[in-house]
Length: 212
Image (cartoon, rainbow, N blue to C red; front, side, top):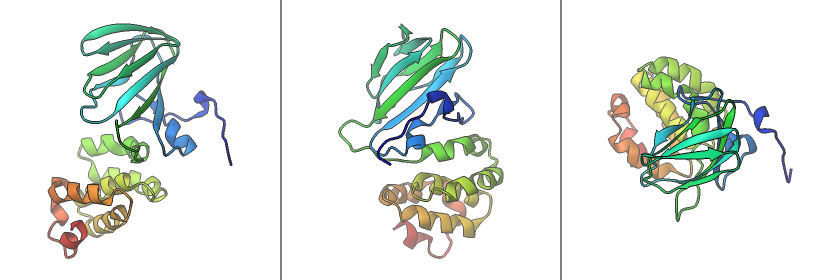
């Protein structure tokens, strides 16, 4: 297939317990840049979580419909439909809906680097369970979707962390092996060497060889 078409509202929303979003990049299988969309259902809803992307992504925001209010390093900006807002890494940013159904499309990437697909869209629906310390529940809920997308190393790594913390050491080791077979394996190996989530399996035979 050389092209694909979708209405934004037809892309199913997902959430990590904060602001729900539509995984546009994942829907189309885009691998060269990140793009997603967030909608505030009611006036006053926070659409974009407060963050600064320090040492990470620059982002371009398009208010696709409705009206938004951005806060950028403490300054307030009114942004009606059609407004483009660009924020460099390190700028603290958030946005709120000023009208119902306000939607913001976000494109992002790390300056000077080729875009690397992490697959965070696969993992984030289960991240709240991890944050709550419900490691077994997170592993149970995530295993099917994560194993169905083995091309994404980060969700496999996170699944392994939950399994390690839940005492499922053999499962954790196996999912680490699969995660480390991906393109971002060296970055994940570096993380694994210091990640306390993996302490329950750090003495398992083969772990040291696995992380290098």
